[in-house]
Amino acid sequence: MKLKFKPKTNLEKFGAIILNLLVDNFSQSFFVGGYVRDLILKRKITDIDIASEARPEKIINILKKSKIQYDDKHKNFGIIIAKRGNSRIEIASFRKEAYKNSRYPKITFTKSLKLDSKRRDFTVNSLYYKPNFKLIDYYNGTKDLKRKIIRFIGNPRTKIGQDPLRIVRAIRFALILGFKINKRGLKIIKHNHRLTSSLTKKRLNNEIKKIGGTKFKAIFIECVNNKNSLDKYFYSSYN
Image (tube, rainbow, N blue to C red; front, side, top):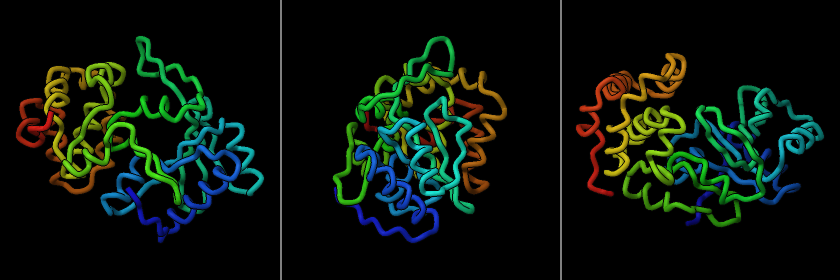
C-alpha cells in the first residue's frame, strides 16, 4: 500500500523533521501506530509516534545536535519526547517486553522491528511507515482497517492478562473509529471484564479524556461498567 505523505500541520511537519533526523543516522526508524492508521483512514492527525532501532542515548544525542528540546523522564522505558512549541513527538526505541506478576514489564532493547511489533496491542496500531518506503504490516492490520475490526495481536487472553487496560483501549478505539471487535477478542474481553475493576481511576480517566463527544463517553462508561453492553455495540461476525 502506498500512502500520500504531505505534512500539513505544524505537528506533521515537526514529525517529518524528527523522522528524517533519525533515518539519517538509523535507517530502521518509522512512523508507527495511530499516525499511520489515521493516515490510511484519512482522519485528523492528533498525535505522532516514531519507532526506531536507536537507543534512547543515541536519540538524545541526535536531538541535542539539532538543538531540539526533549523530555527524557521515561528514558528507562525507551521513550523520548521531542518538543517544539505545542508539538510533541514520542520516539520509542525498539524493545521487547516481559511481564511477570506486574503491569510494568521488563524492558529489553532490540534491533528487531518484528520483535518490537509483537509487544503492541492491536493489529491496526502495529503499522510502520516512512516516506519512499513500503508500509510494513506484519499482522494484516490494513485488512482489519478495511473490515473495520479491532483485533488483538497474538493471544487476547495473554495481552489482557499483561494489562487489563487493553480491554478499555479496545473499547475506546472501536468507539472513536466506528469499528467492531473481532468475535474471539470480544468473547475473551467479556470473560475477563471483571479485571477492569483493578484499574485505577487515573488510568480510566486518561482513556475517557481521549474520547471526543458526550455520546461516545456515555457508551464507553456503559461498556466499562457492564459487559452485557459489549455485544450491542461491538459484535462482529469476523473471527
